[in-house]
Length: 69
Image 1 (spheres, helix red, strand yellow):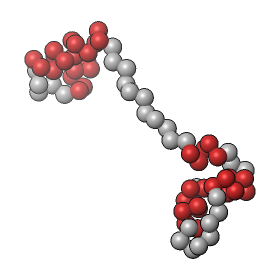
Image 2: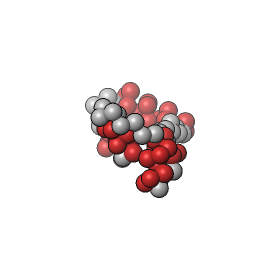
Image 3: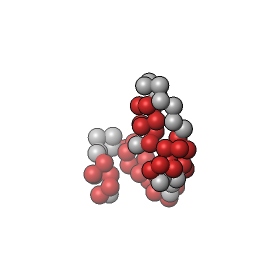
């Protein structure tokens, strides 16, 4: 919201810093700059190898059949 407001005011010639906008709205600056990073999925090797073997043996099996097995 703050970043959108900041970028929307820029073409009009109104230059207001993000720090000032955050102070006006009572929002910490870190919430404006925060970009969540998605963690890589954790794979358990005891399950991965047998599942890959089933898929290679029977490529027509869908995910439902593979999870059922």
